[in-house]
Amino acid sequence: MTVCEYKPGLEGIPAAQSSVSYVDGQQGILQYRGIRIEELAEKSTFLETSYLLIWGTLPTKEELEAFEHEIRYHRRIKYRIRDMMKCFPESGHPMDALQASAAALGLFYSRRDLDNPAYIRAAVVRLLAKIPTMVAAFQLMRKGNDPVQPRDDLGYSANFLYMLNEREPDPLAARIFDVCLTLHAEHTMNASTFSARVTASTLTDPYAVMASAVGTLGGPLHGGANEEVIAMLEEIGSVENVRPYLEDRLERKAKIMGFGHRVYKVKDPRATILQNLAEQLFEKFGRDKYYDIAVELERAVEEKLAHKGIYPNVDFYSGLVYSKMGIPTDLFTPIFAIARVAGWLAHWKEQLEENRIYRPTQVYTGLHEAAYIPIEER
Ligand code: SDX
Image (cartoon, rainbow, N blue to C red):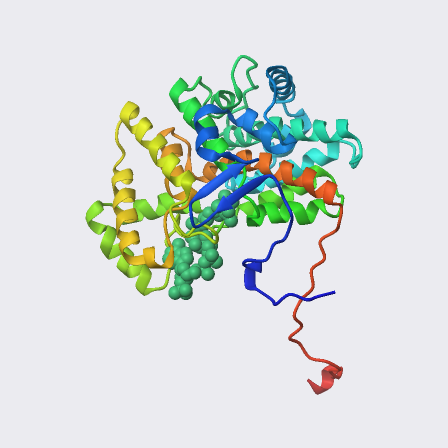
């Protein structure tokens, strides 16, 4: 067996063979099953894109209608899961609530029948359908309200916003939210997808796979950055304070949240699309001062860090879109998770076809033949 050179964070090391998505970090290209993200953002919906990612082809009209019908039918969550969530502390982070409730789904469905396509499809539908309901339910319960039931007459994204805010969303906001889900659905071998594949490779149940991926996504260097971006823009407070703030952060070698990427060395194409979506919202619902700060910060960071290939990533503008929709900042990462379930499921299926457990090696840097020292002599 040839042993590759150790690379911290596995930088540049292929950890899987996959046909789900493709990124060219130099050109700023992202493709889902070969289709450019810009085209899917403009012409597709999140559910149609999820179907494409998971089953590898765009669905026919009948296939999409059947898929949407199944999703609508499975949106409700069992009262036992709701009762379990009622015991979660209101102060708990929604990502922890999501991770616990995603794992809990595994208690209700047969552990493993991974060779059965019907079991695979049922798990895909249940997770895509129920995870938004669980995020919305916890949000209402921690505000002391009873969760509302999903509405069959609303589409996937409109229904989530309805369950979250207890009122029908503006059609433009629902459409823009749906595009945000498409933009966040998949992104090759990011940390949470890698977690999903490692967990899937042990042939455990898909609910445990999702819980593993949700836990990984929550970190501030990964999916948690969008929440940090808003806190950073609020801390900057004004366009005039952008450059002094940036100088201070760089002097302290502190990372600027929402910037930089292991793969993109140009502006993340998703950031460009999200910026356009933000401007559409501001045109309809009024401009946001934090957007002006963000645009000035992007300009200042480019002056200082473009030579390092540091540009805005997907998390830089997403928070401004969600904030304009009245979504609280600690729901930004759970929303990222709602979208990324599609990509995690696509990689879960692909890993089952690969059917080889992850077991990398290591570079040992410890002692050999060390003596055991009795406690009296230590
Ligand atoms: C996501 O992998 C994916 O695809 C992820 C994602 C997805 O869709 O799944 O795209 C979503 O996670 C986006 C990233 C969200 N995270 C953040 O915005 C947090 C801030 N960004 C950084 O932590 C960082 O850019 C990472 C973690 C995203 C990437 O880090 P790398 O590739 O490990 O880069 P590095 O830490 O080795 O830094 C290389 C150089 C360093 O400078 P030097 O020490 O060489 O002088 O670039 C600098 C870093 O200091 N640098 C930054 C920076 N990111 C890198 N400097 C300031 N601010 C930053 N944000």
